[in-house]
Length: 176
Image (tube, rainbow, N blue to C red; front, top):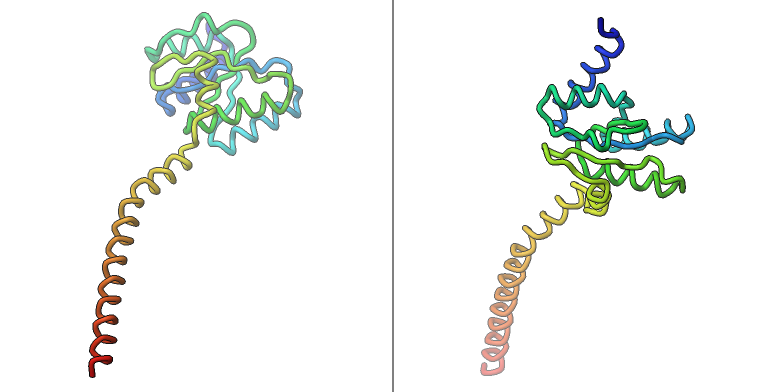
């Protein structure tokens, strides 16, 4: 008979995987103090991400039940899942926290993003990308630049036309 706690945890993992479309990062958190763990969770929450500590067996079962790629090579030692809405923001939070802590913890083992397995270096490369907000701002800038140029060109033509009228008016005044 399965342990009721494990059944509940398996259900939570499955629900979180379904909610994120099967996307998460797998990290090794061993070596964090309680205070550091609390701080990491707080920083992840700020980025709309969540750290979930689970047994490797439960993670393996949940991935299998949902038809996700297996991560058996990475499911060794203590593991935690990081579920997120924005993979770049979550990766940035993990990498920055590990750098600031000088312990290299949490250490990214692997990830799964929209059904594609990510290696630890690939997750770390995600952290180097601009955030979703930065990309949106850049897109707005790219889209508005041609309009601003058009407004400048049209404004220049109007200024030139006004200058011609002023010169003609001055010429007529001098002639009179």
